[in-house]
Image (tube, rainbow, N blue to C red; front, side):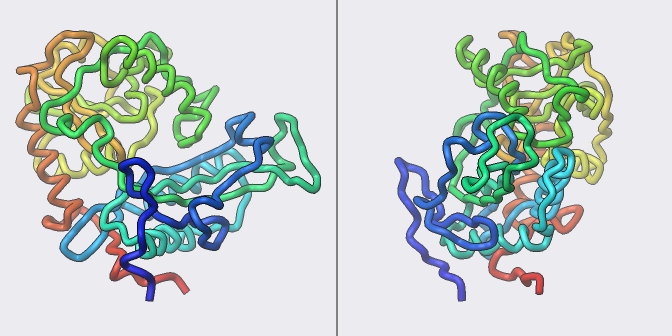
Length: 328
């Protein structure tokens, strides 16, 4: 039986799983290393996922695991990363990692990247000669935008940096290189006293945050930018859309002008790390009443009831670690 009470590695105040899954086997955290000349370090050739595992009465439960791993595989396909890892294999690896870690809740980070063949090193842009590596790590990550953000909301700005376009860096792929754009958005926001930035697309329509999708509430209905606005098709975004439909709240995917943000009744971010975080101001313009709105609060309530196992999900959204049947 897998260890349920494995000692977690203590790094500062973060609980980290003591093992890492690497190319089909578990290795100690301290042995998860890559060569400094790996292709990924110089050319950004990685795709990754962020997955939440929640504490429930039935033990740890991973939220929408298969959808996350399928998106990882889709991202790898876009970047022509030919490998032999299957959906079932990577899902099983995530579940086993949590089981071995002893963590009752955590954040999972699977990543596939191009490394270095030290016997026949290749140092150019061409990625094909470089071997593919897959790692999965886990740690207990708290509230991404702060402990009080889920209730009080966050102050954000519209970034001067546009989201990259689909014909340059495909937003459909959750690629490490895309997050250089995200870092510019995030750093600018922080240096100007904001928690987060909202990027526009190349046509001036609202796109998304540095690592979050965006929803706008107006007159009792919900709007969210479409795929054509250079967004990542977020899994939490999809979850919120399904929750809204179940609650009878109209949802529309459509292009959103910047000024519409200022006039919204409510705004909120969604994402695996951010979960559902209200936005209380944009560019120092107060949104609605300046606090979490009733529709945002209702969606939050249902979302966390689902992730804690207290409410049935619209689909099979929870993979219970202690009850998982591994693929043959």
